Length: 608
Image 1 (cartoon, one colour):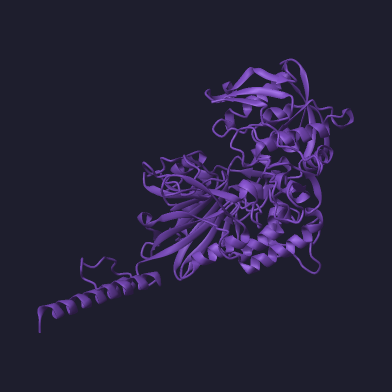
Image 2: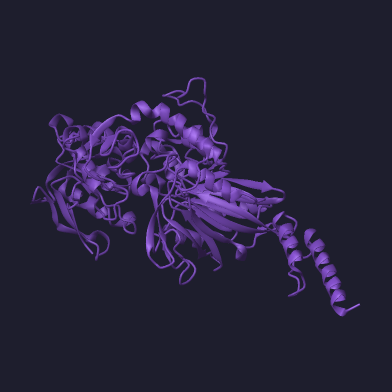
């Protein structure tokens, strides 16, 4: 007998012995180079994927900031930017629950261990088909896509804690009742986690702080937190009686508690985010080194969270990234975000060590994927959307105005947007009459503009027609309008607050009504970005000692978005809702024969 068959038999016996030892957790090692045939290697890989080796790969699918977009979002809100191999970029249509369900189901195929998680703002600021029904349609849709766990975001508190609890537990709306005869809302099949949100009186979390996902001996803990600054960006009523705690301290506390319970693999769902250096979803934010291509609040949070946490799924900034940021021990750790509105999902591989019950950090890899609209729709989600659309139809399809072209809002790339100008003009007109407030100017927070108005629509209303549903998608909060007295000094302070303090790193440029102008110098820092002597109303410089009547929504008037100066306003008068103001403005200034043109967005001069 030749030496080669004998050597092959010896190596095969060696491979079999190693596989047996690995299966019982005694040994985990690669065979010597050349010691296994192709078939042996395939069998070993198959055994590992089926959970027979020391390590197994757990698929973590994640997304964030869905905001009730069960139907494909329109305009720029329904696009992602992709970098092509030649370095050029392209826009890709994406999103919609029908396609998200298909994408997730395809991704899970043949995966023995797969868990799906989300990092907050799944509801709130939603288009009409969901928002009209207090986001019950979205929770139903997320149940169908088999979401396993979600952390809360700031928008989960838009309607207060009791409504959030109803989203979890089910039941009909306390004021509007049940929306379908004979049907009671069942609530979410997945747990909402709110580790850093406590009741001011009891000091206890209002929802579960964490949960443990288990399958065939694999255990992964999930801790959910929202940003500590949630009270600054939610109405006072929405967070009444609640305390929001530091993200780092909270996650570290519960990671330690999970470890005591024998759970050593931990993922944090954090509704706070960062900004990558480039907007393309496939941008490598680890270039030139780990985490070098990302900035913002999440980087400091990631650097402060205990190494006990193995990965961070984040959100809030509506950006796309999948990169590593060093933990306190200097070890790279995966930090991801999947844009917004269900346009992307993140697929992360967590290599789980059965012996240590921990994630092998060097084995973690992650990437964002487009929720393409070129794939087939999930029929069960199509049926769900059709059902809710039929209920919303009488309200949603009512025409409220006409436009001659697209009017960019959320999709604008400049500090001042055409739609922001339009909304501010509508609010001024609604609050200008003496008996309605006597406003001289209006200010609108950019975060309250949730979409664009697009000229071409696929619905039956026809091109250029703006429906109530489209208006609702732009302004879904039903904020009541207010008029308040501000001194000229307070007005200038407000402009400075949009680019300083809490807003310095990510400015919130207020949209202004016609006649109010100023210069923004972005070459400077902090409050110096506002050129003080440039602030004018109807061509006249603002008098710091003068008194001005200013219209804004109730969220801003309460100091929302880190504008505390507005809380000092005097003689407050409450008017109609912001959406009513927009509808009335369209009715007065547009018709089929004379549609409204996009404003020029030339009220704020920007120096770069």
